[in-house]
Amino acid sequence: MSSFENSNGNSLNSFSDIFELMKTRLDITDTARELFINPIKPVKLNNKTAVLFIANDWIKQVIQENYDEIFKKHLRDILGFEVDIKYVTNDDNSVTPEEHVRFADPIPELDDDPYAKTRLHETEENSNYKYTFDTFIVGESNRLACAACRSIAQDKADFNPLYIYSEPGLGKTHLLYAIKNEVEMRHPDYNIVYVSAETFVNEFVNSVKMNTTEEFKKKYRSAEMLLVDDVQFFSGKKESQNELFHTFEELHRRGKEIILTSDRPPKEINDIETRLITRFEWGLLTDIAAPEFETRLAIIKRKAELMDLKIPNNVMEYMADKLKNNIRQIEGAIVKMYHIVFLTGTTPTIIMAQNIIKDVMTEVQPVPVTVEHVITDVSHIFNVSAEEMRSKNRNSQVSTARQVAMYVISKVTDLSYTSIGKEFGGRDHSTVVYATNKVKKVMQSDPAYRATVEDLIKNISNV
Image (tube, rainbow, N blue to C red; front, side, top):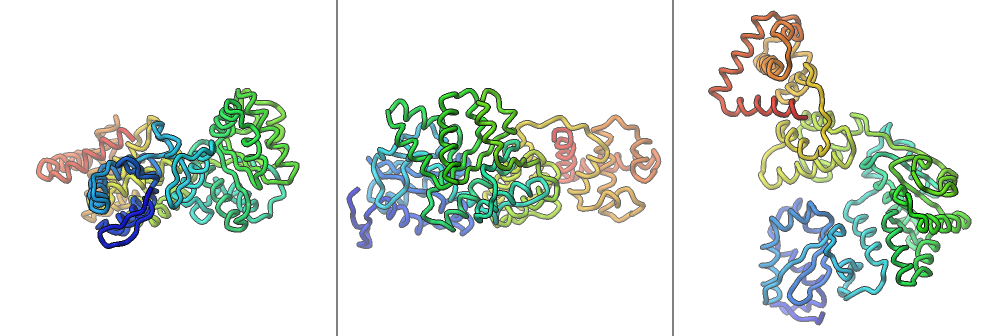
């Protein structure tokens, strides 16, 4: 790409220069700039098409919906001609090899290195998501795994390899990148290789087809440290298993650290060579369990702080109580909440959290509706405790919450009014009748109140 001068007479030598100039012209908040704009990487400008690399599909959607026309306007003003914009991610199957190159200045053309895509995925995912030990929330569920990873990063480990297993979304990849980041900071000259098992297999197959197996072996066997994610993917792939075995042997013989992750213990991986299982078990095996409530709440607080998102405590506690499956689910909910707050200017509420949770929980298990379930949800919305609702407290806010809880229980369970009354400090049948009638009456005259109660019923029935 040849250099040229913009209207101010400044020489622009690359698309990177052009993109940086365009960013200075954006009239947006600091938070939006940090979250959406700064992570974008300019790839190339060719035939009036600008290619921009976006960290993930969600941010890509946000950019396309909210910034695409603004980008085009500023690029047109800078360049003097109309420009189309193509947004790519590493998950985009339509991306061509030259759109996966390492970003440099000036922008390179087609990269002949068959492993460029892997390096891009490693470095960009690493830098954009800032996976470090400081951003990893430690709890009882992951304490040993985190400690083991720290010991490796600080050159204190007396085991090799480290094998971490857990269900998806519990922080294995975060820990791998945390090791990589810290070791690279301590030893900038080290050749640290992170790779997913799927990428390793694909690269090996391609190297056989392209007759470049020596380059492939050099890449992995010359590493100072090798981190392989999701080794269960080697199941049934005999030739790739053989290559991994010899890579493992060479690195282990030279005293180089090997860190492996999987969704199951070594012995539970089907159709994999016994000699690999044996080597996976040579060092330390540790699992990561689903995070307990305190850890989930800490994750929500930390993620919200990093995104400068103000979430009321009762909303965070509600989310921590509901999002029990994995960390990825929790982070997805926070990002979606930020998106809603950023675009609408609203404040996070329990109702907003309920709707978000329904969206992010792709596999919701049916949950039996209990009185405790209803009282907990109502207490979060009305900011009163379950104990207060069951007490003799006649405070207006407590009474309203109690009446709503009685009404909702009558709608979502088969309990009689007498049984419902017993759940609230032994109140009688007539008290529950009065409460349900009162709620019905207020719902008829107050649309906001009605929406709150109806959303409660809907979400309690579905979540």
